[in-house]
Image (cartoon, rainbow, N blue to C red; front, side, top):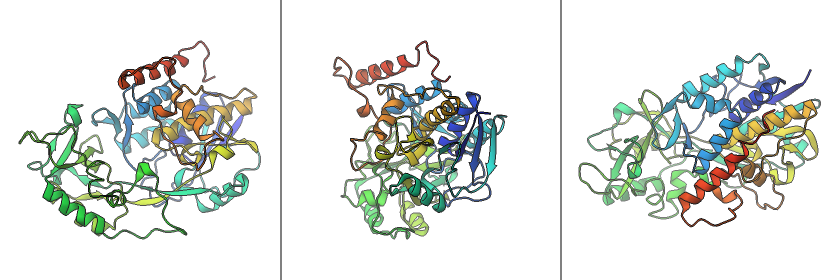
Length: 436
């Protein structure tokens, strides 16, 4: 009987398991929940979203949107569920996190070819084909075994999550609903700041006390895409005003003026009872978060449903270790997927899981591996993380910069992106069923 093992039931692990099962392969999907949780996990569901509930842009002429459309065509279980539990977020695809995780869990556990096992894995299996998709919070003992098998030290950085506030505590006499450049129908709540309010907030933010970090030996290595807001703020007085607090494209409907700075809140659940502070990943102590973030106009009486946290994130040196099919060069029976493989982001992790699952299934079936062309977003992403010429490797998310250029240059950026997306999607419209 053709069978594989998938370790880890986050986004990438669930995608890997379902992709393999769809090819007729039996799967043991092993996850330590509910017996054991990491500090970032709150529920017993598989495929839990531990940071933002946004899956980024949905437009096909955006890098994130193109990636998602490719995933849909590859049979993504995550997007099958996500498209059914959306919450308003302008041009982004955002989901009710509980409905999303419970929906994916139901589809995984409802597949007779997938055997879900609750167990903490401490060693990579020595026989059979295995997909390791344990994510940024890989258990310490398994992480050590990964180092042993890979022969390379894991690289570590820290990932930060933003706080969430209860909607009924937001003062809408101060805040206003609007999307940047009127994109969407006021899907974001905006807390405007004048110059004096911004400067007072900035001063408290950069001087606030941070929480201690654990297991850090020699300094903090923070990935740019998840930079804590207090760390970003220390780069200069206007660093966050040109970053997560940028007021560009926003006007207060009561005054008609653009604020000096603005904090955006995005709906966290379908009911609209929770909102997260966009771009406010943080490592401040909880009491400091309450004190400093309550200085934001409109949030002075807000109740925090969840404070921001910072946790370890691990990834391997993929350009040295992985082949294009996401298997280890030194052991073709071991595949890596998700953030551990060096991709960055929810959907990027899920996409790598699909490809790893397909290739693990093809491995046991004696079939040729699926290598997506690098003019597709998924193919370009996996090509980047396995490119031996990449030095000082850092995780990579979907972006048009990793795609090969068009034969003829298109000056207009939006038109160029649309052409790049069209070129990529033509591959999925070919005669060969790439999922078989």
